[in-house]
Image 1 (cartoon, helix red, strand yellow):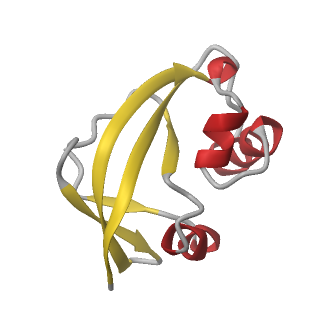
Image 2 (cartoon, rainbow, N blue to C red; image 1 turned 135 degrees about the vertical axis):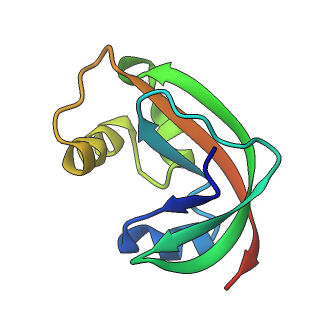
Length: 106
């Protein structure tokens, strides 16, 4: 179980602005649905958020709505970012989409 989720600094503002309401993580991940976790960037907490749900899909099953919820314009932009963060990601690999709502800003 994770009580902290780390983000690259570039995503902090759009999370706090409510434009990014999910985070997509490579692999099958277990997040504490219903619990409040700390969001960090550069080892500093920038907010607390409630985990609403976690959905598992294969990379190829992601769509434009998933991308928009994650703060991107479209699926292509999202996949490009995932490959930048994780290196090569295959179409048939699993990703976990973590839906959240910010409950407190630090």
